[in-house]
Length: 158
Ligand SMILES: CC(C)(COP(=O)(O)OP(=O)(O)OC[C@H]1O[C@@H](n2cnc3c(N)ncnc32)[C@H](O)[C@@H]1OP(=O)(O)O)[C@@H](O)C(=O)NCCC(=O)NCCS
Image 1 (spheres, rainbow, N blue to C red):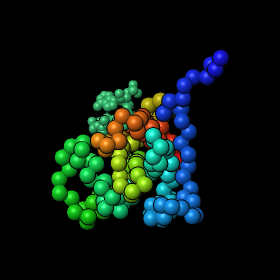
Image 2: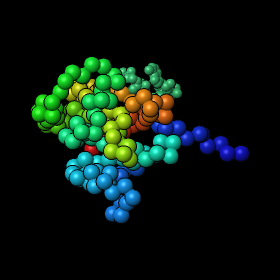
Image 3: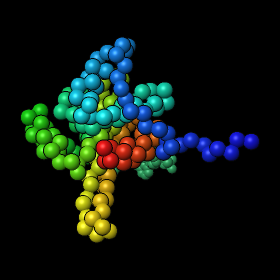
Image 4: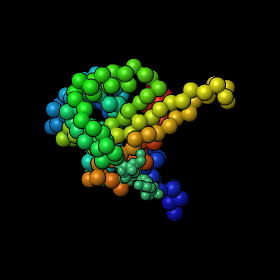
């Protein structure tokens, strides 16, 4: 009898993503390869669809990042310039990690933010707070939200 517990989304390994040199999804891969050494990404197969978890990048403005946030709450009218200024502040703060999920069509389909709180108690420990979690309506109930928790934990250790 097989006594191994059923594999859940939590146990599934996160595969570090190295874009193949020759790919049928050249545009997607080219987009990812830009700055990939600074932006590690993980390829996750969700119901036969390849999705990439990675840090927010400035050109995600054009990939529908704000549209995803609008499924969570009001966002307002944000120009590319305003987005870039805010992005720059976030990027420079190592305790502020925004992870997005990109599909093969190059659209952002989910986002979540990890805020690391530095403490003095418990021997100068740190606590992570996960905020602004939203998965595109078309991608819900596929355990993407669950995978986020692992991805944010791994990313915070990099
Ligand atoms: C909440 C949300 C992120 C879940 O994403 P998802 O990828 O569909 O979730 P998963 O498929 O990974 O489900 C994870 C678990 O959370 C539960 N869950 C999903 N949506 C939930 C919700 N709105 N409230 C409570 N639990 C929820 C699921 O039942 C599942 O439980 P299980 O592991 O016991 O089966 C998604 O529904 C969403 O974007 N909602 C709109 C924005 C929002 O409300 N964000 C949260 C506040 S910041």
